[in-house]
Amino acid sequence: MATLFILPVEGVLSERAAAALQELENNASIVRVQLTRIRPGFPVPSSLVDWMEKVNNLKGKMAQAANSGLHQVALSEEESRLVRSAVALKRRLVAEEVNATQRLVRDERVALDLQQQVKPFDQLLAGPLRSVSPLQRPQIGDFVTATGRASLGDASPLGEPALDPKHGILLSASLLANDVPAYREECEQRNKPLAIAFADLDDFKNVNLVMGQVPVDYQLLPGVLNTVENSAYGHGRAYRFGGDEFVLLLPNAESTIATSIVLRLKAAVEALRFEAPVTSVRLSAGIWITRPESHMSAAELVDQAERAKQRAKDLGRSRIVVRTETASGFDETVVE
Image (cartoon, rainbow, N blue to C red):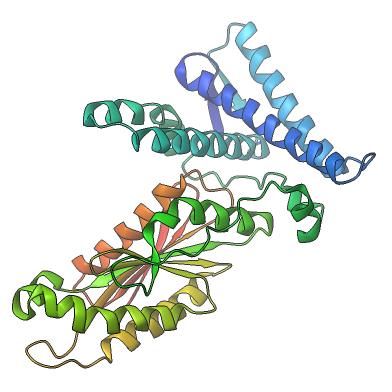
């Protein structure tokens, strides 16, 4: 049997891997309970039973190796992919808890200390697991329709529309904390990607300096923001992130679809004409496309889109950088 990964069975990394496998088992158990809530006596799908057996067998294999005094255990390709799925899930859940707590603290050192909770999982993902593709873990959406899922009442709905208070054109960025997980969950139940676009105007500080902040706020930005809203309509939601920055959430959007939407948006913004001294503006954007098995928290996904946008700036502005998430990295495409 080919071995792709050597897993330690002692120390912090081993403890984190064991905790991750337990989380994966808990996740499958939740799906099983959800099925019984839809209809008592709902038969447990054989694929779900097989998945839980594989997780239990791997947990047993690790425990047996540790009890035998071994320091590591060799995994098959499928077992390594199962570990990858487990660590990704556990890492995401821990990161979500850390991010939520960080929003409540004032001391930067405390925030940094909290981030250390994620580090052991990052070490696993960035080490031998880096090139391992995760197995798709069971979802309730694998077994029942959208109507059946809705009957459970477990889904997180999109936030009630609340407009950015300054211009009242795009949605408020305060909704992102709710809407990213909500869109993400719906995409994951359908095994579809979620695209997050982060964009802003090029040389905006200079535009403010030349034109003046008040004229920018009341003459230039309303036209830009309205164009963003028009371009995003029907594809997802558009949020005012701050100043000249905005975010688009585009569910079920592969690279080609997301790029097409943002390209049209970019062209529409750059086609706007204003009175002197600033007659036109340019726009840079980053797109991050995440998959159901991503290990990142919702806040980290938005941050990755912002990083892709900054990459577009660094490459010369007025372009789009598209990054599609892979196991522990991304594939990048630059569109000018």
